[in-house]
Image (tube, rainbow, N blue to C red; front, side, top):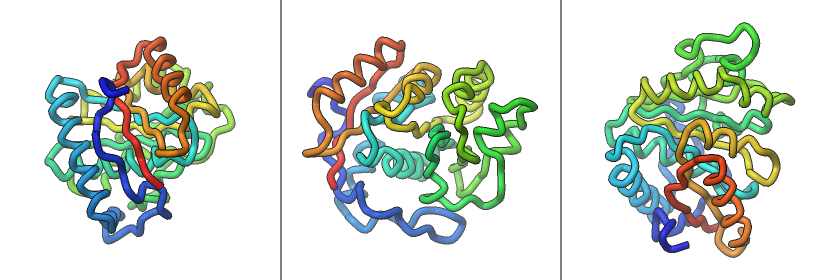
Length: 228
């Protein structure tokens, strides 16, 4: 997996309870210095090897739950926004959304679900600008028909609009072993980053997910290993 490793370091503390939120809904910085440095290191790699290559979207995927996928998506988006990029974070886990547990919405919106449902809401009305350079499209209410919603052409339209409007769009996805949603999201976004947890995630599961994503025509830019 060496050729597909984005960050040599692993994330200490990626499995801690959801961080506290500060004024304006922004996360209080992770207490672990190593965590902060690891996120900055990942940001550097994404900037140099992904964004500077003209790629504007990245789906964050994991083979199973509990590996720190959402934690990574939230903190990578924050780090990119702090570097001056107009950044959008999307919660595409319509089955069990959780980004709102990390970043406090500033107002009530219907989120991604409203953008994909019949009588679709306007994307601009659903995006929540929560901090300088950082906007969030929350998932909205849980959807029992999540895969059906993500399979609609309207999802492609939403993603394409986001890729045009923002310097970088980070998309959080549900665990791949629970549904095909992550594969669908990755196919539309075009590029994926796979997250695994040290001493817990099986190498074979990571390899299987990478093969599936590539089969679905998503470019896997690398893998990140998190610690408990």
